[in-house]
Image (tube, rainbow, N blue to C red; front, side):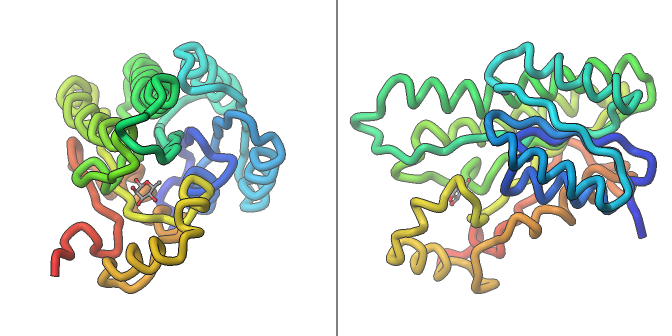
Length: 254
Ligand code: RM4
């Protein structure tokens, strides 16, 4: 069953990892998909090729989400190519692990600008277009389990994930009158480039895996089903919600 037939889905940070998996998954469910990427041209091209291999249309637009114009340009290019915007998946994010006490100002500010500011601009640009279109839409912020719990080397990062979760709650109220739904996904530890170096430490990896009732770290493809659900009309009465996709890690105290 294809849940996104005829929809246009936009995904940020989609040259690799969760964004790539979600973009291809949306195409497999019948959507035309536009992806944003920052630097990885080859990865973006490969993602569009995989989208088109499903028989759907794909588009890659380069841009740094920390720049507000990237959001307006991304939406405009998607509308130019596909005629509308039905779904925005705001996924782009960074997590340069670093200790709190000597956190460099630039590392802190860059993480805020990409994750929080970028997410805000992308969701706002998509909402503006959806309001103009007048037929609702779905906005999904890729928050994190880290919206709900801390990380010693993530003091700059966890507030951005909590912020994205909170943004979806407020945007859900602001946009409900337009039938635009806003929800956040809270991935657990999903194996991607963002944590490749961190999890190269076998002791850290064993600890993280040991916390997960399902017994394994996540894969980017584990995020496809939850994203497609929230993007689809199956979630027509779901807004302001948050969905943990973490193998049970969050609830596992003992
Ligand atoms: C996630 C979560 C994971 C970490 C990545 C970088 O939100 O904190 O544990 O590996 O970020």
